[in-house]
Image (cartoon, rainbow, N blue to C red; front, top):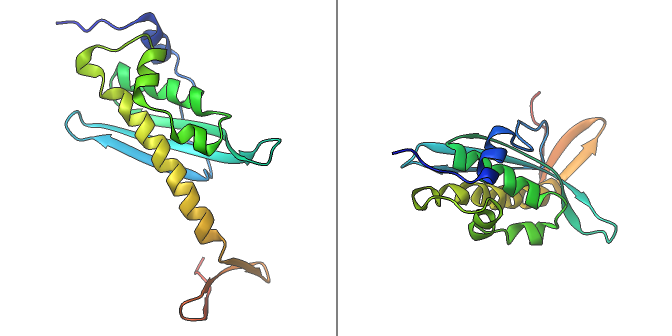
Length: 157
């Protein structure tokens, strides 16, 4: 049985937007579906808009998956780019399915990977941002102030 995809799915599968690895991302999300052996990595760079809110300034993804997975990830990244973090966190698979003009029932789960990876990348960014509040620059060395132990730790290079 051959699976029939919409023109929009095929367009995003054959010519995905935002595909590739990002150097020095602010957040990384990894989502996987062990049943289908699909894995997706999604990378974000965060900036600020004119109102000073944090937005997804740049976004990229890599994946090992089928046409529906690749297409859904492409659409997810296009939708998330330029949105505030709060808006991007609200992107759901139903919206992605609508934007690709539907998916076969047995492929609906593929649209979930991009949404999950995006939420994980945003969470990763927020956690790293919190951790980086404790970074101090001293004499061109990066030091992490351990508040609990009141010690200064200098990582090895």
